[in-house]
Length: 115
Length: 114
Image (spheres, rainbow over the protein chains, first blue to last red):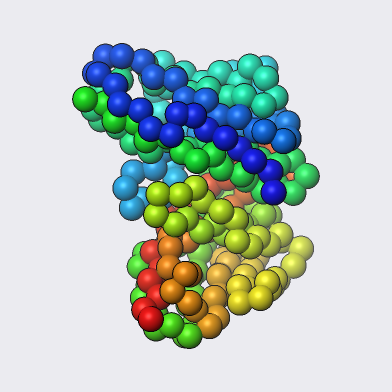
């Protein structure tokens, strides 16, 4: 199957700093990538849809100024958590939709801990 | 927008028994329904999917049924094994459109007791 790589897999940062997470589709082009947030023992909550070459579409309740998404190329989307606070600590996971089949392929996820 | 519900939230079965997880969706335009398995600390992996032009699909011990009229779909795992223990998510989407988002249900934690 297709491969989606996410980096870093875990990051610890101080409150007030910004953290960037990268999501790459390694063997296919993804015009659309999705960013999810997952709390322990909970479902995947869609945060935003990242569209190559255009602005991301954010879900209701997700602060676009807090979670900056950039989809600069057909294989790379980035999520920047700005001025991170402890409540932003979570597991962030990206995915890319394989256009042919509609199947979602997920990255490994990034565990963010804000001290 | 789409809303996906899933039951039960936890399920415990004896090894060899069957497990059934049920989901409902709200958007009648949805026509692609994947099921994902997520083991602890790992990324979700697609285990089976179904499109609205079929009512049932089977892959070895796993089967999925879809009732478009009632807007519900189910996952059936037969002859369960301990390695089937994981969290299972159902989801709904429109597959022709790359941009369409995939909405997940809340998940079912399945435990298979040896």
